[in-house]
Image (cartoon, rainbow, N blue to C red; front, top):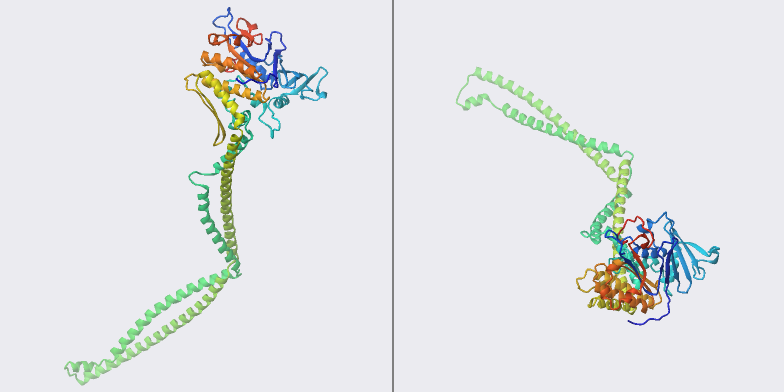
Length: 594
């Protein structure tokens, strides 16, 4: 392992105390610190070490560093507890930060608060105490632990970063990169990028891009693309525009005739009259043809000679008969003449009626043509209003379709722009990974070394550009051990702590609950504790671990003193005084309180 400077440039935990004397005070030391939960000889099988407070020790340290109230600490409300974490700053100032579950929004700071830059002198009480809000406290811790010189923008918060180095909640042991069960991808990227010396601001850009892409996707239809919808609307727009242009032209040439309706009625009346006259003429012409036919028949019959007919038949009539026939023929001729005169008079009258009707038809047709010409060149006022209404409706339809097309075109442009921005962001992300390779290579190498030391097989910590930003993943040994993923978290945290310490950044301490060793073989547990001890000493930071005594792999240590010398507190289940609080509370034990 590479040696590191013996000088300390991080925050150092000094002690954890409380305002009740039964509280089991802890004095921290450099290097590895271990809190052990022992089973007392007098303990019965029904006694449990789950409520002794191993996890509570870590939770109280984190609480004094500004963490939100946990369910377990919430059950301490109303008892007047005040917990105090004493620490030394990078500049050597000594501080005592006190916080109560009853007033969790306040933090009481004693010590060199002015020289540490926490408050101004006039904010310090006569007793030498500064009362500040928890947010102000964590902002100071942010600057003290994580701010890099020349930093161009605010990094992830102290609280989000410290969760990577204070693993005691169950959801902080899912994988090396997440510290919350439902942690946002943006936060995972930003926090790990910062800890691995990458440009964490790219994570924010990826999150914004993802959100914008999601909004565009809501308006997009995989089965009917934006461009296809534009193409379908364009012919509709053209038809509406042509119709609008025609209506506009019709209105421009429209002339309002005040007597339009009268003329329109006159045209209709003329049409009806012309039709009636035509029907009457048709009937008269049929009658005329009949009369003319009858007149011809009468003419033929009037010229027949009865005497000649008998002579031609060879019959000789007497003079008396001949005279009688002549008298009858004369009578017949007279009848025929009268009939012919009647038919001639009727024929004349019919012809005169037909001529009069034809003249009236001609007059009506001429007037009708004039009226139709007027109607073609003008219109009624209500027709003009209806035409204007149709034009307005058509213009509205044109505007609506134009707006739809414009919206889709803007959406298409945004989609194209997003693709361009995504390519640019991918390019900048890749460039950042390339340019900062050396800055993360130490963590990658150290992670692999620790995992190989534990399992005898290589393991990889991989950082690569993905579809939604920077991806972090580990490739672990195929050992079949159920706890290998926990040791990957352990190795990642140690590698980060060493890297931060080498840059004189970070909090200067690392906290791991006993759950980090769950399902881990004894041999790996012992080696992990030895690696933790070596690392903390070499890189001059503090590493606090909690563990049950019956899970300590005594036979696997190369030197048991590595463990024994690191124990700073022993809890036991013999009586209430053996717990961290020195008393037993009616806790509802959850996954954090083991």
